[in-house]
Length: 451
Image (cartoon, rainbow, N blue to C red; front, side, top):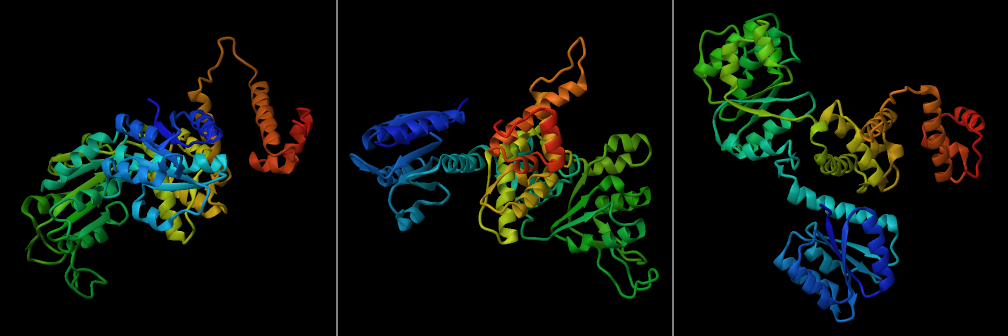
C-alpha cells in the first residue's frame, strides 16, 4: 500500500514537479490548487503528509495547517514559501510536525525533507518506541505488546536473542516501565569476569575473605535492592555460581564471600543470553532448576535481519544520537544509504548498525550522509545480498563465472564513469578501487571517458 501525500499549490508547474518526483519515489499523490479544495480533501481523506504553499489564491497555507493540526495532530506538514519563513509561527506549531522548503527548491532537498517527515511519522505512528526501544515491525510486535504486562509483574524475566539485538536495552525498558523505575537498575555481564571475582561482585565480600579484600564490599544484589538486577549472558555462569544464584533467587537472601550472615534483598532479576540454554542443560552445563527459576516470563528479541522494517527508524535515531554525541550539525541519510542498510544482513545486529551509523556521521562532511561514508565491507555484502534477492541463480547449463564477473564489473565501472562525468579518479574512488586498477580495467573493457 502506497503512502499518500497531498500537495497544495496554485502553480501548475510546481504541482507537476512535485507529482513526478514523489510518484517516482513510490508515493500516492493527490493535488489541490486552492485552500478550499485542500480543506475538502483533508476533511474527507487521510494523508500522511501535506506539502502546502503558504500563499494560496483564496487563503493562507499556514491557516490550513493550523486548522487541520487541531483536528488531526498526526498529519505531517511541509510548507513551501518564496519568502522568509515566519519562524515564530512555525515554532509554535513545530513539535516535529512542520518542515519547510524555500522556493526555488532542489529536487534532492525535496526528497530528503519528505523522507524525514515520513520517517518521523513512522517513528511516532507505526514503530512502537517504548523507553528507547523501537519495534514497529511484525517480528518485534509480540515483544512490544507484552512489555507493559511484563513490566508490571514482579516475576523473573529471561530475554533471549543473538548478540547485539538489544537485550540490555529491552531490560532497561522493562525496568523503566515498572513500579521499580525510581530505584536502581544494575547490570552485569556474567561472561566478562572470572568465577571468583564474579561471585564477589554479585554477593559482596567481607574484609579478609581473600587476598586483596582489605575492606567489606557490598554486592550487586545489595546495590540493586528494591530495584532491578540485570544478569547479561547468564549462560556463561559456572555450575558452582549457578547453585549460589539459585539459592539467592529462591530465598531472597545473599551471603557475602567469607561472611556468615545472610541479608534479605528485594530485587527483581532480569536475565539474558545468546546461548541455547536447553542445549546447555542437555550437556550438563546449566542447571535445569535454575532455568525454570529464571524463565518465568520469556521475551525473545529477533535479529535485525528479521525486522528490516525497523532499520530506517533505528538508523535515523542513531544519526541523531551520533550528531549530538559528536557535537555535529544535524545530518540526514541519503535514500541510497537507507536502501543499502535494508539490504545488508547485519550479523552484528543493532549494535553493528549503531557503529556503522556513528562512523558514517563522523566521516561525512556534508549534511547528507552518502554511500561513500559506509564501510566497504558493508557495501560489498549488501550488493551481493541485493543480487541474491533480485533472483541471481546459477543456470542449469552453468556459466563462465569470470566472464560473468567481468560483465558486472564493466557495467558498474561504466555507471561510475557516467556519474563522475568521465573522471576516472573519481569513478575509482566511488567503487573503492585504486586508480591504477581502474585504469587497467577501463583499458581492458575499452571504456571511454564519454561513457
